[in-house]
Image 1 (tube, rainbow, N blue to C red):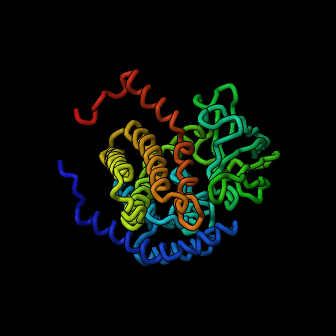
Image 2 (cartoon, rainbow, N blue to C red):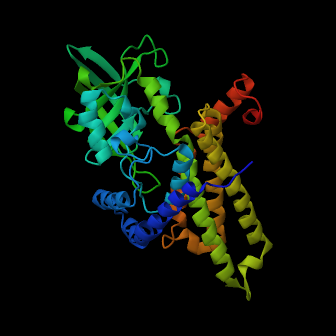
Amino acid sequence: MDFSLSDEQKAIRDTARDFIRKEVAPLEQEVLRRERNHQPGITHDELKELQQKAKKFGFWGLSTPEEYGGMNLPAVMQSLIWTEIGHSFVPFRFGGEADNILYYANDAQREEYLLPTIAGDRISCFAITEPGAGSDAANITLSARPDGDDWILHGEKTFITGGNDADFTIVVAVTDKEKGARGGGTTAFLVDRDMGWTSEFIQTMGEGGPASLVFDNVRVPSRNILGEIGQGFELGMKWIGKGRYIIPSHAVGIAERALQMAIDHARNRVTFGKPIAVNQAIQWMIADSEVELEAARWLVLRAAWSIDAGLDPRHPSSMAKLYGAGMVNRVIDRVMQIHGGMGYTRELPIERWYRQVRLFRIFEGTDEMQRLILSRDLLRGYTKIGGHLA
């Protein structure tokens, strides 16, 4: 087996690495200062400016098809780039992207929603989670009832990423209660904010925060149905599934940066006349972190490779999400311990990572849901142990 990267993969990765190091990382101290003062670490205009700079480097639309001006990179390459993004805690992402399910838009919807989103002129969010429907996404209750050529949406969505800034949302609503979500009873709608829905910021332990979206009899024209009537749950699962290898790819980058900080600190921090690196307790924390980091790296790359190979990626993606999310939490905890009291302060990014990565075990499918998927696949015979080597 050849685990090396191709020359092209190395070149693209190294270019992304240079951009993060030269253009993004220098903003870190300002981001920490702003967040200590309860301000956004980076504004939307600043993010857009960075994304335009990245476009000049050739980074625009990592997953966007070439016909829309994107790079349409293979999943393995996207994984490597998201690892590079994780090396800095500045809340940055490359531009030129749109929600994967937005490509189900018809011609008119492409002009009104898809193309402006790719260009960065419009901001979207995806809304399926509700106060009573988190991991059990099929339990949604926000309703959409027909009224002439329109639909009336009523209910609430919660923990919606980007919901505070979005000017339109892709919302999944119940259109036929009798059929149920999995039986074709839900539909996705493109709903502009000026159609009447409102958002409310949700305070969390992390920086920024999701939103609650309230739909109080919001009128939406039938032309704003995304895909087909009854396709809402299917589209929702496609949206959720995409992040299952991206999130742990990001986690690998965070863990790499944090572990290097721990190694540097262990070499330089002197107690009782010796660097703390000579202490076995410190050495074991560093060793355990390296082993887990490498294990997560290959689980993530295998999940991405499965996509590129045209295989069913659900089982390997669940393994990558489960292990990668747990790995980065354990590594950050050790890195904080190695830094002692200084790691607990807001002068360093460690406590920020500590709060940030805790979410990785919850959103886009909790640890428990990944375990359910993995055990079900094995118990029902959908997947064999070591089946990818058969």
